[in-house]
Length: 195
Image 1 (cartoon, one colour):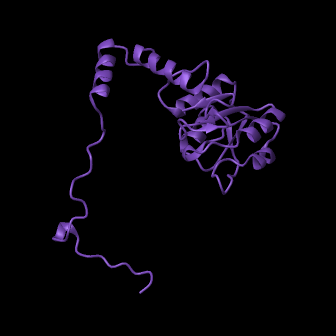
Image 2 (cartoon, rainbow, N blue to C red):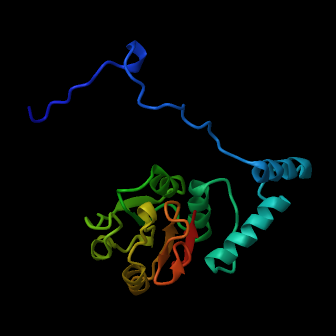
Image 3 (cartoon, rainbow, N blue to C red):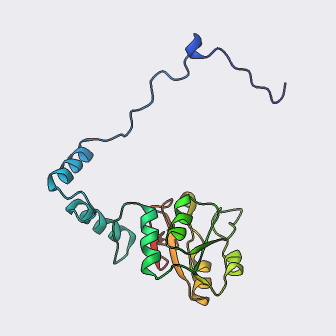
């Protein structure tokens, strides 16, 4: 019969187990990670100014091909810091896609700006640059394109629209570490990037 699924007896009630071994313990780590944690603890500098974070930041900046980068707690804080540094706040609008993690929108709200949703392209699930231009008003100050699932947004079109309307571009690249747009790492094309 189509559309009907028949199940056997559950393992807990005497049926066959589907998995011979249990799931791996999380988090997975080895000696390198344990040694790194030990170095952080021994440095007594657990914040973003410690030597391990400094080394990571320098390596990540080099990997991205950018001159400047700052480590903060998480991607939400990154976007809040960037929006504030750009002078964006009450009365301003920031274009965001509706298909994203809540942090993208909450950062805009936290700084007092208004998020304006721009629909996504149904093929890429990324912000549609043509719909982006239609959403721009005199109050629009920035756009946050989100690179979803490792797939970069069409940064050529987004940057062209942003330049035409004098908008800041904060790339939300939290879903796209290592992905590229025409040879440039995601997060390094716009005015700023957030990971």
